[in-house]
Length: 517
Image: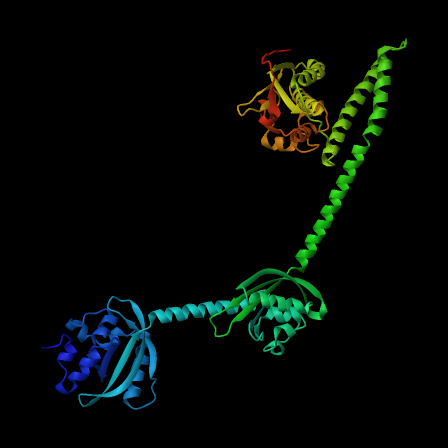
């Protein structure tokens, strides 16, 4: 029965058994005599991606299967081997498969007698995956070498068992002032870089139980004996016969100094701010007492108490003194309140109270100012609710919100205050106006202490710029939160939401709504 291999079919009887043996091998095998291939096994055709039943493939020249850049090397090896000269027993080259793809093969060749004539038999093995892995390893190795040499962090590689240094990078030599030949094969622990000799022992002991250590602070002795601060990173490298350790160190001395300086500056600023706040809070009596005296005596002069008979001019002077003093006292009160907040000395005496009397008082206090400005006041209060709150802070919240609303509402405008229950069981104080409104950026400014939105109306009604920041602080003290919505020329809506746990209902429920002008 004839073999399916066409080369085997043409083999002479005395080489048939040898050819059959080669045809059964898993490696690709071909036999060459002179310029001709006289035998190729099934595995060889499989490597080439060709059919060994196709006469066209058999007739192709050997050069057609070899990469053009490798043909000279293969031919030289063949000729040297046939002539009995020096030739590599194994070498590598590239083959071109039938579909045009490329693969690498390892070739082992020897001279044999084939049909009574000298021939070269070659055993070829596909090593494309090995070549790819080798190239990848070389790329990784080259990349590591480049990083090792150019990184500003110091790096050293040493054995984990004997602790002897295998390699160091230029940054290590520069930082610690060593020569490379003086540190190779030296035990790392014996270097003078360790300001604490026990540190390295603990460091290595930890690495023998774990694969890596990250971001460990260490003080090391650098060139000239200077102590500098580093963050150390280390990773154990296995699979190299003996375990190795790669250690890197980043100099963070300047970062630490900068952070310490920032902390000192921050502490000094906080101390200064706290001292200022405490001073102003403690000066409450000293600032208010003389102002109250000025206000009191200016009222006596203005109102002609005690039979004083003054001209209208002097009465106007006294009235101006009283207005200016009142304005100054309001500013001082706001500053003192903010100072108490910043100093952590704002007190809240919480009790269950009816908020309506507090809000009514705010309306009465602001009514005269609203009338002078031609602003209409309205209100709507739900009268069946109680709050757990501080009466003074609640009045301050209402008065500040109403004062701000009237201040920034033009003549003929409307300011409304309401108090009602919310859907979540809490309660809300809301103050809305039809005033000049604010952009989002202006809201941000208004929420900052002493921040004042630049407008003609704000310059007419001067203030401390503390209204809204104080409302926020007072609200937070009562467990409430403040929100603000505003658009230019559309007015402003400020809400203070009280949580459900501080809201109670009166035993007898009733509701009323009133409108005042």
